[in-house]
Amino acid sequence: MAGNYLMVGAGLSGAVIGRHLAGLGHRVTIVDARNHVAGNCHCERDPDTGVMVHIYGPHIFHTDDAEVWDYVNAYETFMPYKNRVKTISQGQVFSLPVNLHTINQFFHATMGPAEAKAFLEAKADTTITDPRTFEDQALRFVGPELYEAFFKGYTQKQWGVHPTQLPASILKRLPVRFNYDDNYFFHKFQGMPQNGYTAMVERILDHPGITVHLNTRFTRDQAGVYDHVFYSGPLDGWYDYDIGRLGYRTLDFERFTYHGDYQGCAVMNYGEVEVPWTRITEHKHFSPWESHEGSVLYREVSRLCGPEDIPYYPIRLMEEQELLKAYVTRAEAETGVTFVGRLGTYRYLDMDVTIREALNTARTFVDHTAKGAPVPAFAVRPI
Image (cartoon, rainbow, N blue to C red; front, side, top):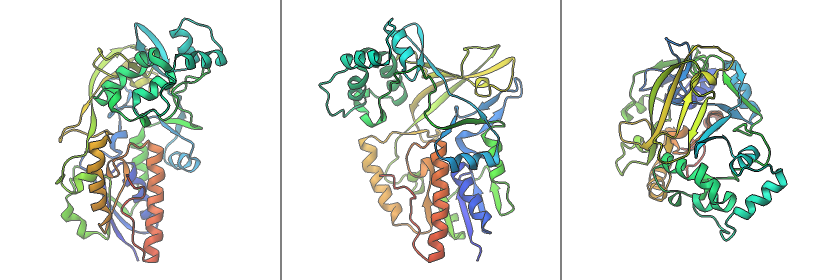
């Protein structure tokens, strides 16, 4: 028997889950408050320059998940792309992530890998045996000079707090490469959609069993019309923020144009706290297979997210953790709704992880409903 399901949000989570269920013969309605699909990975071609612009900041697709890679390539041609980030610090341009070239340039040296490892170990604060904060983690593994130049100011601007107030987990692994590899990501599959992410999501949604309503805000009283709701809005928003708002960082974008090539790369970070923006992105470099005379750029400034802002990065500090637990407890007592995606689970998710979790969520839902078993509120529990 065909079900009647609602997806709140026309981003990757809603599109992937909706397509899977529609492919099994179910009726799927998707609503989104914005005037476009694809969520924060929405792309538009600038009418003046012809540049494909990532409206909500750049999204580079990278994954080791072969099924997810095959999935996105079924709906859009992905072109080869390697993310090579530069940063300005102390009046020089360096490569990120910190690699052997960065180390040698910064310290005016010509060290090989083994020498550089020993050199940084000597710089590191080995008295820190159990790093608890971001600053502890950085000082333990790269020492004070590289920390001050590349991590401290940028992190303070991005998160709005001193690195001593951030958990060590933000620096999950040693942020240094002892070779000359300046590819920002490690993953096997990396690329950019030839016609942008919006075109890809539109193709995912192109199914007779799917109906999309844009410029449509969801209210909880709509949920009862459907057999099940997949909700990718803010977890606390489901409850109208009645016990408080979970903390997010948002981004302000200052757009400007340039005739020619402004900075010679897609992403230029600014590591010093005196510079208000965290980075400048030049969007024609995200499509290196295209050629454009004009250029579209954005300066990015991070700040605390207000009620009317677009939430980007969940803060997840201690005060958020207690509030999150309260919301998760309530959500797990719900029936008829599954919370999905970055906002629904209050976790920062890369696109490939979002798609993987959406596929898993759809399959789990189908399996549970076939057996008459309860459907879990979360595919991945936020805490």
